[in-house]
Length: 441
Image (tube, rainbow, N blue to C red; front, side, top):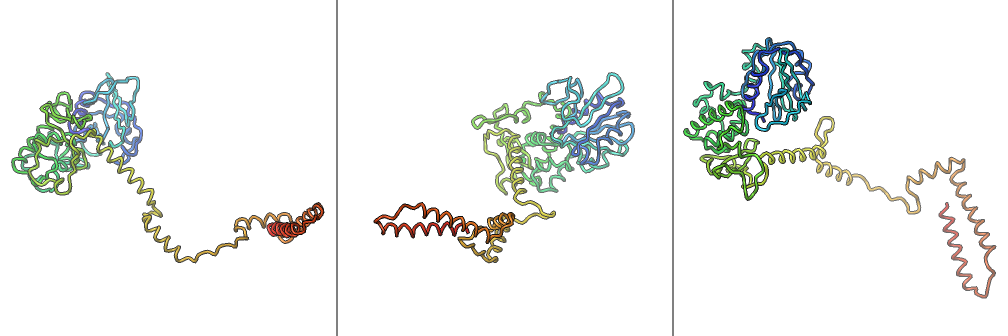
């Protein structure tokens, strides 16, 4: 996710290529997640910006906005994978993309802008995962930070240094009993600190990310304040260009796939370990970030990953989320909703069905010589369809059998001197003929 440094990079490009120009063409395609979830539409966005001049670009943490010649002003949040592209200019921060100038607008675009003044500048906002948010804020430009959602966010470590003082941070840390990294990631406390920035400043402060915020010593809190300003200011000044980051930063060594016999390490040989804090995968240096107070993992079970894991740093949370989605899907299929109410558990249904079966009397079995109900139902229409009753049909069958029997007797060979065999054979034939006769009735 783009954090304070990456957003500062885009604001820099906006000042360079967009501020002071008029928007001649604005095109947007509606996305219910990106526009709709925050009460905006693509049509409203086009109408609000077309023909207006961009007079400024500003930032607060992970949010940034354009100051227009008149309200409303568009407010942006990149979410997990959003970004701002400028045609014929590379804006990527650590993984430059291959230019394909023949394809414009780029893939996953949400809106495009084109300036009126030469040289014309073309811009596009893209988001493949649709977690970005685009709002229109109808207020005076100087009041932007006093309205939602900006007013609910904490101070920016770079532009609000007069607010984020050491005394302010000490009061914030001591007022909460949560893992210190979870506190830093909460944008309501401090704006702009994300996963990688949080890991960098905690390593710089030599604080374990799981340690509860109100157990830090005065010296640790003092150092944490310095580390917040140092890491955030460095990321913004370098516009998140990772090649320029200090070699001792985790950012340059945490990515990629480590092996059990060769885990990721810093240049000085210190091994990088991964654990989950505040729902995010954290990178730490165990030999530096010691536990000096209550730690969540010690109280509620360790959340650390195995040392030397061969999993990618970001692959572990992805697999966990995928498994959670599978479990939730299976649960939803097993427990469908009925009339807006959740269905009863399958075990309860089975128990209820068993009780019902016990209460109902057992059905009497049909006689062996009587065909099943389905066959009886089919036999009746077949006989009556020819205008013949069941009795008449059975009589006709018996008559045919009698004629056949008479023919067999006439064609029988003459009697011999074996009366015992004839007496034995005759009853046998009679019994077979009777069985045939009964079967046809």
